[in-house]
Each structure stands twice: as C-alpha cells, then as structure tokens.
Image (cartoon, rainbow, N blue to C red):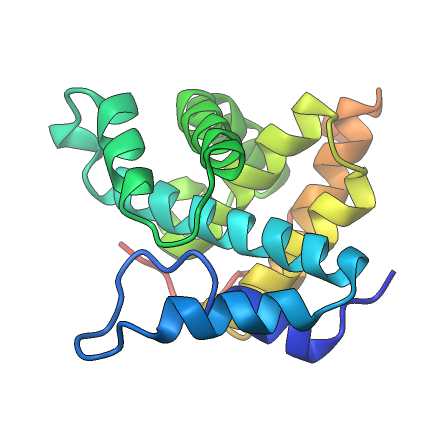
Length: 199
C-alpha cells in the first residue's frame, strides 16, 4: 500500500525529532495535532515510518562513535527518553531495532560484502550502512512484511542518502531477503556503486 506524501513528510520531518530547533517549543504539539487529523491507518503508518527514521539516526550515531562505546544500551535509552512524543511502546520498539541491528552489524556487513564485494561497509555512505543494518535486522526478525521493510529502507535512502543509494539498497535487500528465505548468496552478482563513499 502506497503512503501519501504528506504522511511520509510528517513522519520524516515532524515526528520523534532527536533535536528540536531552538525557539520552536510548539513543534511537537503541532506534529501531534497533524497526526491526530490523519485516519487511523495512516496515523499508524506515520508512527512506524518515523520510528524507522529515528532508528536509522541512532544507528548512524552509534556507528560514528563505535570505538568509544561503553554502554550503548544505556545511551540509546537515555536518548530515546528525550525524544518528544515518543511513548514507551514506540521507544521500546526503536531501542530493540537499534540495539539488535547494532549487535548484528558484522553479520550484516559480511552478507553485504559477499553480495557487493567492491562496496564493503567501509566504502558505503554511512547512512546506507545504517539503513542496510536496520533493514537486514528486520528481515531476520520477520516481524514485519519483507516488502514493507525493503520499501521503507529504499524510501529512507531516497530521502537521506545519495542519488544512487536507493537502487543499491533495493538490490542488496532483495538478494538478502532471498537468502534469508533460503536462496543462494554465492550466485548473486555484485551491485553497482552506491554513490559517494564515506571513507
């Protein structure tokens, strides 16, 4: 099911913001009002989209600080406690996604490296790495429909990464999903370059 652009925009720009711009204390109230005006199914979609976006942001931060991590779980929980309008159920969902994806990052990176040997994790844009780690973790959990997981990952890549990232993310996740479902990784062809490298 397609997500209306205003719902996706609300989720990406107004819900569960990690940082609230100075002088805008009413933003969370306005976002809550906009959310309340949506039909229930679209409201739920906006919440899940915003939750995934927040998870990608936190994974990005963890990745940037990976060498300095002492207690990632406590850091994530403290950060989530400061996110406006993030209720305890969504906070728990986001924490599980972030910590699970971070814990399994080496497994995900190895799977991606096998599928795209010229674009291992250290050559990918950092946002792509975070998106792939989150989506792969979700595919392994099998809590959400795979098509939804892949579609949302592609949308995140379109919105927050390079021009070529969405194609790269889509190709990798399609092959990883087939692998998780019992396909053969070794037969896969390498993907094309995902865009500007991060290092």
